[in-house]
Length: 72
Image 1 (cartoon, rainbow, N blue to C red):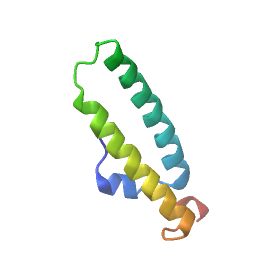
Image 2 (cartoon, rainbow, N blue to C red; image 1 turned 180 degrees about the vertical axis):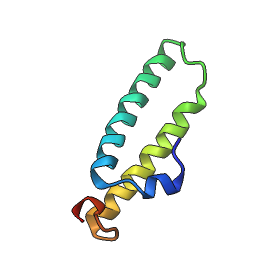
Image 3 (cartoon, helix red, strand yellow; image 1 turned 60 degrees about the vertical axis):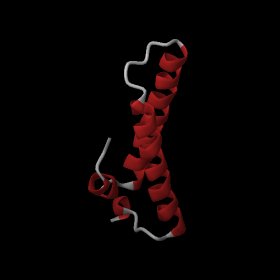
Image 4 (cartoon, one colour; image 1 turned 120 degrees about the vertical axis):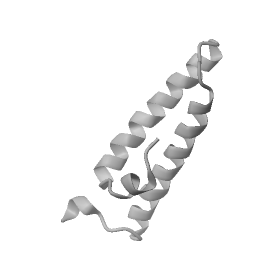
């Protein structure tokens, strides 16, 4: 799980990429859980929280509350 400061330092494009990777990882963890092969079920909660944080930051970029660092 990334720290808050590391999330804040990401560019808009990095956020999109990280979001895509996390959503795929969450899907894989859910498959493992369904097949009862998941060793640490807490990982799902951490990943869901990080996805929510990334979506919030992305929404702030879209609303103009944050400046896009990759535009500079």
